[in-house]
Image: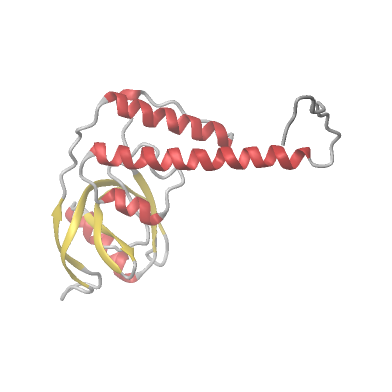
Amino acid sequence: MLPLQSVFFPKELVALHIFEERYKQLINDVRKNAMPFGVPVFIDGRISYGTAFNLKEIVKTYKGGEMDIICRVGQVFKILSFENQMSDKLYGGGTVEFLNNIDDSVLSLKEEVYRLIKELYKLMGVSLSGKPMADFNSYTFIHKIGLSLDQEYMLLQMVFETERLLYIKDHLYSTIQVLKEVNRAKKIIKMNGHFRYFDPIDFNNFNI
């Protein structure tokens, strides 16, 4: 296993630079035996969940044995036991339980989340690359909607697609409201120092 302070989700491509001796040994073993390796999330001083990585390509190998590699992320797992260093290896390992990914989502919810993502990007002035709705899921923009490490880690542990989409929907709604208030504040600030025209209030028939 190769613990990292990052969260990775199924199907994404990840580029890593491998430089520690123990992980150079790990990648060489992975290459020789054509096997996946685990990347647990190191968070709050512990590791409990992570994802399997499949080595796709070693892009470059340096003189000192360091490597630039590309991996495809596989299934999410929960760690049952962990050894910081296995008896005959420099790197750690352990036993894991793979979690099922249950797609119980409905199209209307996916469309609503996608709509909110487009609204968020519009408010930020960022272009959104087209993605067919048939290919859209909770993982599609998960690193690009302002989630914290803790929030991403929470999503990693959810096995139901609907639960993930609802969580993302709530996050997007809150973020959009904050951005709207920020944009409103910017407009008010820009007005400061400019001549402004106000209609005088007619105090006829005004009582206290």
